[in-house]
Amino acid sequence: MKQSGVYQKGSLLLEELFSEIVRLNSDGETGAAAFFLGIARRTSKSNNEVSSVEMQSYEEHANKEIQKICSDVKERHGLKFVGIWHLIGTFPVGKPIVLVTASGRGRREVFEGLRETVERYKTEPAFFKKEVFVDGSYQWYEGA
Amino acid sequence: MSSTINVTTKYFAALREIVGAESEEMVIPKESTVRDFLVHLSKKYGPKFSSYVFGESGNLRRSLAVVVNLEKVNHDSLESTRLREGDTVVILPPISGGKIP
Image (cartoon, rainbow over all chains, first blue to last red; front, top):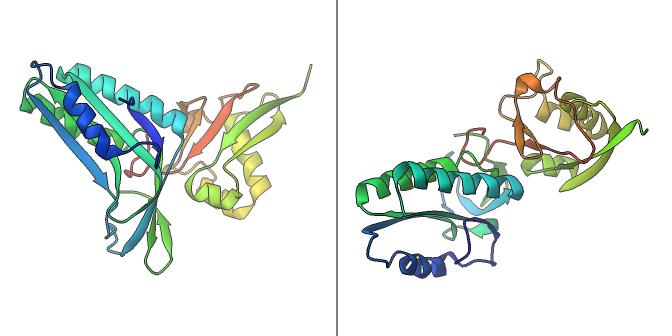
């Protein structure tokens, strides 16, 4: 299984990762695994209609921060595994961009760990998002 | 001994569009600080670059971050952090989740 990190669109199929993660958690000690799939959405936060999303990344920084998040969340929540796989490139609406997973003994720590991992990957690694609207205009994401 | 050093920078998001390149190798005076480097870039790329990077006060916008060799440089330390031969200096636009690192 490919390690957590940044991948060019097309070099990794997020859908195939799911099966590998299930296999990883088949040891009998793991009681829960949770997943988050980030998807290119049709409506932006400013209520404009999106046609595609472009993701860029300062990959060296993002890979380092992703490893740090996974390691930190795994340790602090006592989890078996935490993973983040983030694609970069241009994505039409409806296409998945990022997969996050957390697994461990029980659902409490798994849900808490997953949530923290998702919130942190959105703010700590260097990813930059451009929303291209149906009228041809676009906007680099400039804040929450 | 040389009076210049070679540094690398990379551009992302709107900065990449302003500059028209993904990365650049540059020769700058030895002893340049991070702020000196930002000013150097602003002079090279003009008002559009300058207004994106600097606020009205002339300081780096709070929404941006600068990392040198993957380590963030605090806004308060831009004028005191000296660059060295081979450094990679990157201005980070706002990260997609909305907050700066």
